Structures are given as C-alpha cells and as structure tokens.
Length: 213
Image 1 (cartoon, rainbow, N blue to C red):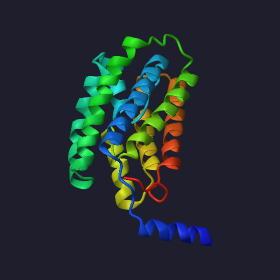
Image 2 (image 1 turned 60 degrees about the horizontal axis):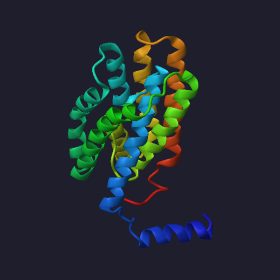
Image 3 (image 1 turned 120 degrees about the horizontal axis):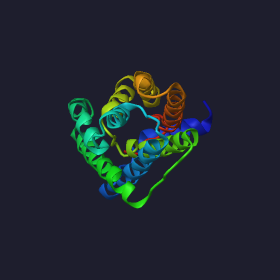
Image 4 (image 1 turned 180 degrees about the vertical axis):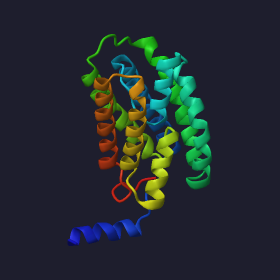
C-alpha cells in the first residue's frame, strides 16, 4: 500500500461520510427518475426489453396494454418490506417517492416527445446508458426503484456482493423468460443492454469508493 493510499484511508477513518441534504436528495430523485423515464420511452420505441421489475412491467404492458406506470407501481409493493427490515425506513420512503416519480415521468415524457422509429440496437444502447446514470444517481442518494434494485443493494451492503453483478444476474433471467414474447434478435439486443446497464453500475457504484450518504 502506498503512502498516499494509507493517508486516504486514515483520512476516511477520521472523517465520517458526508451526508446529502434533503434538497440534494430531492433533486437527485427528480433527475434520476427523469433519465430512467426517458430510457423507458426509448425502450418502448425500440420494442426491446429491460430487466428487473421495470422489465416485468414493460413485458406485461406489451402483452396486456395496461399502462406501464400502474404496473410498475404495483409490482414494487411487495419489496418494500425487505427494504424496511434490512435497509431502513429512510430508504423505503425515498424508494416509494422515486417509484411514484418514475410512474409520473413515464406518463409525462410521451406528452412532450414522440421518438417515432428508432433502430433497436442504437435505441437499446442509448436507453441503458440513461438507465445506468439514472440508477447511479438514485443509489448514491440511498434511493432505488424497488424490486430487484433493493435486493441488489441489500446483497451489496450485507454480503459485499457488487450490486451491479447481482442486478445483472436477475435482469438476464427476466430477459430469458421473455423469449416467448420477443424474437431472438430483440432478445439478444435486450441482453446486451442489460450487460451495459449493469457494467455501468458495477464499475461506478462501490462502497469502497463512494462514501457520501
């Protein structure tokens, strides 16, 4: 270990992690859900899928035509108990607000922009970059979008398994289960998107690198 590394570690031990203000948290949730909502619009226009509870909601939306915002909100309700028991009430409240904001964003975006036709590969790559940045913003403010996000954060905090890797495994599982509803080309593109998303999270959200709370 170098002297600079030792000095950094000593400084981190002597100085507790800084806390985000409530205003910073509020802005982060608005910006994060805005970006994720736009990513979902790109996915819908590309006719591809994403993983997690958002992927499940999007899949059911394709099959039943029930509005995504309603499905996403309902699918996340069972996961709040895990968050309350393992991650604390503050995270439950932030997550509940973030889920509500995303449901709102998915209704607002189509009112102001019509993407029309977009090449599926490009649309999926662009969408998952927006997903990744949006999720990072939420995670760093101890918020999430419920569902698999909460489980991935729990596994990272409790067992030090990187959240990005946990999320990737679950996302790919959801996408494979979607095989009956999309053709194999779109499925492969969707899996590539899930890998891009979770590599962004795995390389940029690590408890040993980011200490602000």
